[in-house]
Length: 181
View 1 (cartoon, rainbow, N blue to C red):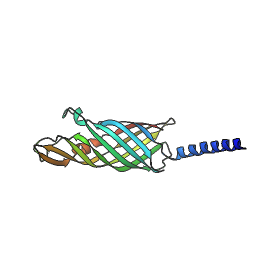
View 2 (view 1 turned 90 degrees about the horizontal axis):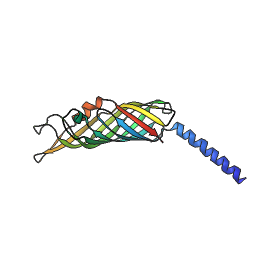
View 3 (view 1 turned 90 degrees about the vertical axis):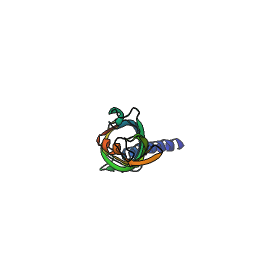
């Protein structure tokens, strides 16, 4: 009698966990690639229609353009909403978020010269789509603009400027390849 109960309980839990897995977006981790930078990304479902994306990126577009020799770093946390059916293979998403980091910016500002390295802090957004394969791998393509302030210091003067690289280079798409677990 007890053996039959435990077998039934095991089967019920197995079936229930498979149903939950197909209805909700699983956690996933992977890599992101774009002209704007490369890094790591982690996605975690928050509900049936939304997920949280946390990423850390090496910011190197100005290294590629030979304006600086060292890349910067950026971190983003974005709350994405699934547009349409989240249990289908192709999911469209969009959401707002926060961005922070330490990066170089180009342009001239109030400090009479090109912007230097500085702290960035601001808001960001994410627009894109994700395709989930039959194996636990997904690939997504998105655009992530950043509207941030760039705080720099030169000659004992602290300056605050618009982080122009966050808007200019955000028009390049970002490719994410993630493993779902």
